[in-house]
Image (cartoon, rainbow, N blue to C red; front, side, top):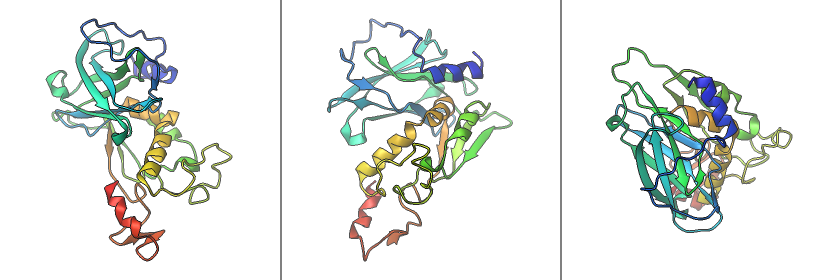
Amino acid sequence: MRRRGFLKLIALGFSFLPLKSFSSTPILYKTNKYSFNHGVASGDPNSTHVILWTRVTPKVSGTVNVMLEISKDIGFDEIIYRKKCSTNYDNDYCVKYDFHAAKYISPSEHFYFRFIIDSIHSDIGRSKLLDQSAEKVNFSVFSCSNYPAGFFHAYEECSKEDIDFWIHLGDYIYEYGQGGYGTETAERFNRVPEPKNELFSLSDYRKRHAQYKSDKQSKLLHAMHPLVAVWDDHEVSNDAWKYGAENHSLDEEILFLERPML
């Protein structure tokens, strides 16, 4: 399948792709109280491993068992690996698995992955390893992605490119609340930051990351190519240093010291 065809499948949510039954694998749930609202992603590829990610949105709390499936083809006719994973509130219902891909595929090959809870399945992701024998590497570079300031058109365009991975140099999210930097057109664009306040608690950061990950153009890129992520300051707070940040100092908010726990 050509790259553009795969992108069309992502955009349609793969709703027409039937799940292959596998009687040897026990059914995890008989309920539809779970959904995958934040897409799938892969990242930190090297010559042997790549991390695979998704997030479950449950309607009830508790531990959630999720089946990871990996295939050489987008139709999952040849499943090369299955792994039962679990997640819960403590890690915000994220699933993060370090896949030893070199055992199953060559570095030059793409593979496809998805997550399943009973008949509920995530989008399909595509990823690959880094080929140490390659004479050249193709990658794209991003930085400073402020959700309320506009749309992620560059992400969508990059998803169409023939690259090995993409690098984000930092400020993948911004911590400002509504009325802060870059939010002047947020209401008009229907991109008001969630939560509306400046980020401070762990819950705040989780909500903001979830908002970014729910963006359709962001989900396209994350599903299509593995990410190499570098942190800057806005992932926590602007101009952060040992004793404070732009909007936070020890004199005004001693709780700022709790942020390293994030």
